[in-house]
Length: 264
Image (cartoon, rainbow, N blue to C red; front, side):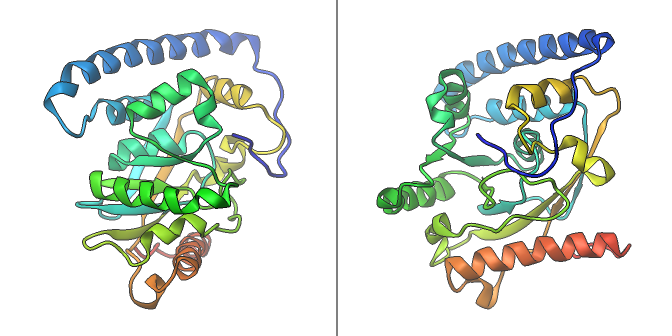
């Protein structure tokens, strides 16, 4: 994954913070071992194995995320369209909603990441391969049918969190017509005043960002705003879905800045 933006990469981690990084890495590895064992023990007996989502939720907690959830959690099938700020978005949303994810196929080329993603039944797509869009649409529709919640980051990369990049609509073809019983919900991931410090943007390598987050002493406050499902003309086409979801998140951001209650 390549993150783009305007924020410069921060400096090196202070030497005295490395013990905290090491402690969190050990905790993450122990949690991974426990959850992988649980996954394979449960796999023969369950169609929807919850161990990967338990692991991802634990990753967010161990990384220092303190999460507040606003809005009703998905009770049935839901397609979540979220802004994208950090790698933390994925474990946080998995912990909050039990969601699986759509990811670009670049991650599939990295063996350990592909394995971890496959445990969580990630749907891999080739964003730049227009010839395979029809097959990818079929994959997405199947994933919506088989899982309680499926999340897409329509920006396609991370932003600095103070605004949004344009929402790409190609994969939203899978939602037209909207499958029966599926709610399409915008989600605003709000890291508050420290968004710029959390965001993975600019030229900062992914590993550097990961370690920098683990080196933080202060907790990361994240509010997950599960906004109202889209309805009516907003569902007419993939482009209206993308535009309506982006507008809903932008409105929530604006309401927050004005000190108004975000409409859910």
